[in-house]
Image (tube, rainbow, N blue to C red; front, side, top):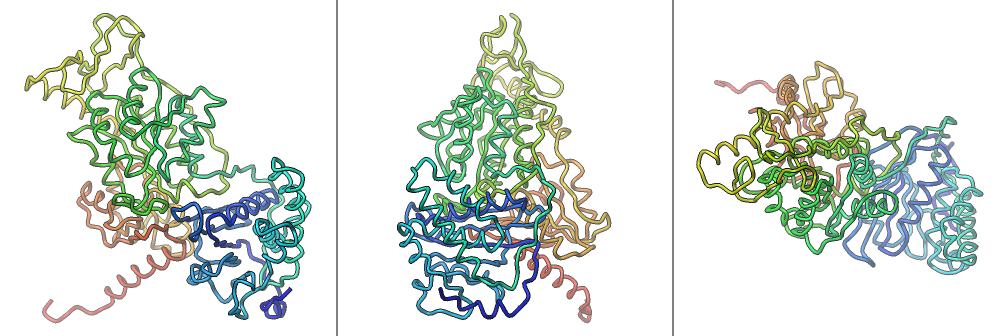
Length: 590
């Protein structure tokens, strides 16, 4: 076996690292997902904390897909640009990784695919070994064995894991995969690196490992969701799939509908009948739901909608990420009616906010929109076990009497909500303007009465708003603002910068704009908003709600998330530019 990098690595004493970043690149169908699953599962079993995210092209075969895995002795939940171990399974993968490679990266390749080798390459003949094992399909298991050997996973544990993973495919496949993982371990042991992974704590964390889609689905389950429907559209489909699986064990009806117009109308029908319904979609699908959203506003129906964002307009980049649908969520639908918009930044928030969304929708009889994105739903890491809030499943439904009026005028705008068949009253709803009983009217005074009643809910909703999360010193002059999935990345980025004059403010509740947030924003001399879209949609919202000008915007809209290093560098540049300007003497006559 050739190993062009072995002499260099062996000449140095291996440095212990608490965190190792691994990048795998291959085409669709090459099995990099299998490598990721094996690495993450075995590292977790050994006691490490893990993080994994992926990017993939919109095709079934070919193209370039990648996965990034971090294995750490402490909790980790953000994308690192740094790559310590890189495995490109095809030649096109090397230029794809080029910007992330450093002089210390262990670059593991199959030399037969890279005729122009460099000293940095560690040559392991994956294809040749796979052929000996039983065919090219086993190259991914061999590669997994190589990395497992490097990070110190027990070989017997790895063999047991692959045996369980492939058990349904028969004894012959199991035997070949066990041999493949063993051959990978043999190759991995021959590699001498300048670093190795520190041993994990012996104390078990008790954490669970799951993705953003799992967190949202579990939050819906905890919130009493008993009806879910959607039309498959990446990246939202994972939530529909998970709840469909839960329907085998829980009282949930899961429907794949013919289109998104049908989706929202079926969900409104379910709420009308007393169910707690969730719809899940992406930007293009939500655009088709705008009329249904207005219907929810007029009939004052609760609604919970999961909107997993991806780059637009139109089909855009269907398998990539972006925070580009905030304006769509804010202004979708015709006419004026209250709504709530939430955006989880952590898996825990994905769970708690989704659970809370059902009670908010039920209590105030308004649409609640949960904004995630492709990065959030497809990224997974280990986190503390979720604790469902005590609010549970409190359905705000009343038993009607003969004098029941669906839209009776109240001080806070929230009318008693009845459902058909529960009581003696008639539950009348209509998409036209209506009176307190729900019957169509065109009277000017009645129109104003009903419109004002609906909007009075906003004041009550404001009192329930979640305060933004503040991290940093109370007297920090600089404030970095995030929403949604950029939170964990910014948190690690600012920790890496280590500037006491810079704090972080994360918004999980976007609309109505949280009361009190303006005071925190005005307390900083400089406000920097970081978000994954082209125009700074949340920065615009802040200015609209507070009249506060935003000092600078860090924007990314290439379909990829920020990395920790990228965001840290961008914040540092903004602060350095500002400080340089402060030191510059004023022009004469100014």
